[in-house]
Image: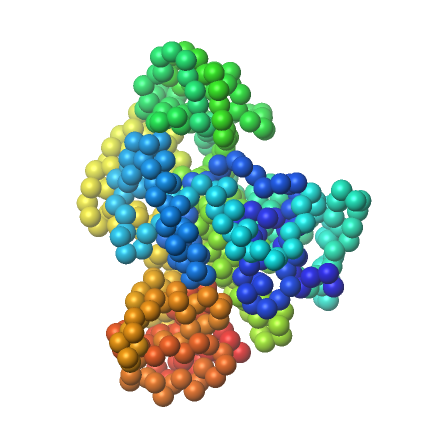
Length: 469
């Protein structure tokens, strides 16, 4: 075979998945239809869980450095450094579990450097997929002509408009768009209408960024947003003329909400926007996709190595499917709050007042971050099992302090044991790194940062067998 796993798509999700697979000791190959990396600023940040996932692989310092500039850009363009739900900027940051403001092209460069050594073939377009019990063959158009690439598994990370999903026969049910947005870095000449909500939509203008959100229109074009097109949209929404001389880093998007009916069909799997599309409200897309990659990478590597049965891959959709559905639900709710009209205006006022309540503010913050989403495991367990562990300090018997992320860079499981449970170390054998500590209770961490066990010898045996064979 040409590779153990063929990854289709070299965006952030595809690159991170390929790096996770390589960390697991198998051979990934990435193919990408674009001849070069996109410079389009489609996203401007990653959430708490994606930040922690990359920190577990040693990328925390680089994320922190990028966050400073990204936060400045966010505050400049939005007029607030607070998080938002449906552009109601009131969400307080979680100081213990921060997110990262980083433009997507910069994130892609960071992940490309992290995945250095993984072969990436650009200007390669997948046109057909043939799958059987032994493997997958992708028919690929390349600058040198048609090629056939074989692998044990194929993962589509090729975005919402990618071909893997349809070529492999996945269903993609959901709802059509309610709203559409045109936005970019805009240069005006002369007066600009006030930013805010209008009877026919919303006009955003902060720093050099401007955008219009209005009800979805038929025949939405593709490609960059032209100055005349944006000016016409501003006129429709505000009723005032604006002279737009330049639109850079333009983007157009709608808020359709669709999710694949499964994330796996035999030896073909989906991750990221290939598996789910939704409004970008709340900046959740990259967070969702990178966590798909974190969840799938170590499982697929374990199966390819022959250490775990193929059925382990069924847990991928069982765990990530409900999380994707939850994001579609909250983004649809945000679209409802962003729609024009006096009834929505009244509802927004009430939601804004609710967000002043500490408990409600925390609810909306957790909704967007996903930190309270808990996986259902094939064995009974109580919280914190099933939740993603935050970063934390660990103190060993000699008083030496390390961070949890110092022990997760190999991509293996981590068994943290307090003094009362040291005798359980032998159960891990070669299946997980054992870390003795004195300042926290015992727990078992999967390679994707999810807590798999938090007490009891019998329960530890079950957890180790379930995830590590």
